[in-house]
Length: 243
Image (cartoon, rainbow, N blue to C red; front, side):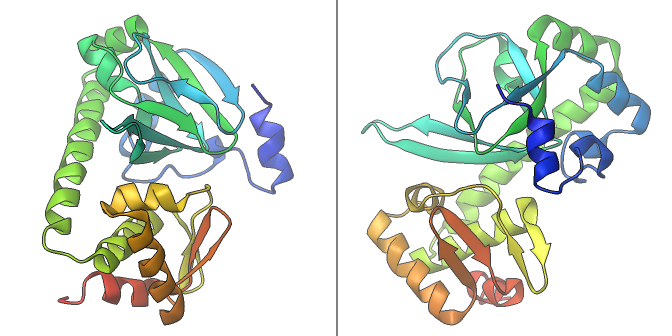
């Protein structure tokens, strides 16, 4: 574990609790009183980057309420690769599926940088849901939103070429988790080209070629394990040419 608060202070960022929670997140959708009750559960924990918090197929009994930082959820494919399933950040909840049904973990969750969270036991989490209808409703809506997003992801990719799929992935990541910067956005956590390939449902060489095209267009810039959106409007036009 690390002192995530000191790490964030050195970066010039305020502690996450002082920010407005993103509206689509679980915490962002709760009223102040209900949010305070949820954040009163469990214990505060801090982790280094690249720390595995939840391992696929394990039987562990806690959920994590993310306060600050980013995690990625991955699943093991039949040929032994790690497929990137989702990205979650401050305001989100991870580990709730196994907490609700008591079954093994469905994915591995790994930190993408210093993380601050609240760790809540399954018993305390389920007791909270039974006692507080507003929190239970918010958790249910958050789970449904994740399922809807997964369905939309599959539908949006039907019939699209690799370049279009990659542009849609990057636009979604920028709009959901990026920090606006002028006409563009910065995606602050490290994201590799193999991870982009799994999100776009494409082979790595095809993603390399599509990224080169996006760079030439001026829509994105790339570095080592990093992507910066230079022009969100242009990226949107590439991602959704029929709009």
